[in-house]
Image 1 (cartoon, rainbow, N blue to C red):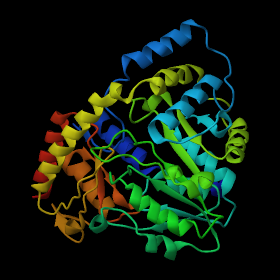
Image 2 (image 1 turned 180 degrees about the horizontal axis):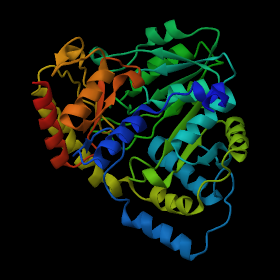
Image 3 (image 1 turned 60 degrees about the vertical axis):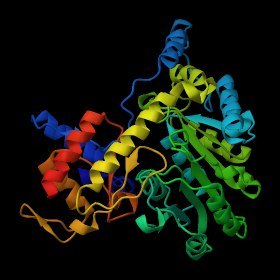
Image 4 (image 1 turned 120 degrees about the horizontal axis):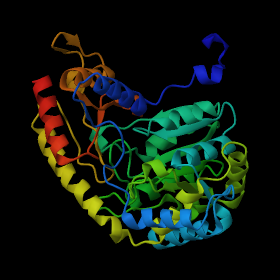
Length: 395
């Protein structure tokens, strides 16, 4: 019966991160002690003040359909957050609240991209960008970088990638999977190129904005010439340990926000009402309230980099944000480990899962075939155990 499925779904790849997590769960269910370093999910509990806001909303009988684009007071809290944290002026009609930042991104791509138009992906990029573009019948075009440039592209690379079919560019800082952070000057240099192409739009994914280590976050829409062409995407999953609450949002030109609301109205309608009420508490709070998580991530980063640098064949940069390391493992490609030929990073990630019992993610899915992503959103105990296992498996 699978032959009766649409070409659309048959051509859609499975999320690499979720696929690796599923393989790890399967091994766990069979009694294998798997250490999961594949998912980008904070291991902290959602802060109590946010949970209490949700409980209060339940007791106040928030149980009806919510507005498609979000509660008015939540959208105002988002406007206030953009002003406070990003120095961006948005009005409520420029805000759309969605079921996670993934839906926010999908909405934007669906309302902007026509079949056959190009979407530039700054590689390495989050695994779902390419699939979301493909689903909209656009062409995902990679602009590749590597560890030698701290996983950042240059203005010349951007210029060379633009054609008359280019409609959108998706950028992400702090970056998943590399943890790299673009500075204000680096973004301004990219914007100088885009100023010559007024029909290209920019989707700026800033979901990791608060998880940075000594480098100030800079929003692309803050560049005056880019404000009217930039869609800023954010959400609560990462910084507030609210992955399962599914709250994402955009700040965008009002005509794009209106189109996203129209799209969402036919797909999911309004986002979960209780999660929205909790989101108000999260966004209204000082960033200081989540600083303890960021400091723990910083400490884990130091630990995992130190341990990985002691393993021959792992080449690392020092990520300035997010909670991933993205080592270049090209040293192992072409080698045979315990009878298994390593032809690519996917082989290497599977080798680590089967022999070290550590779940990571292949860089292929991120547009970086010589790398693997390792999440340090895990306890220090598990990080130590995992890296020791990896060292034994490849030594």
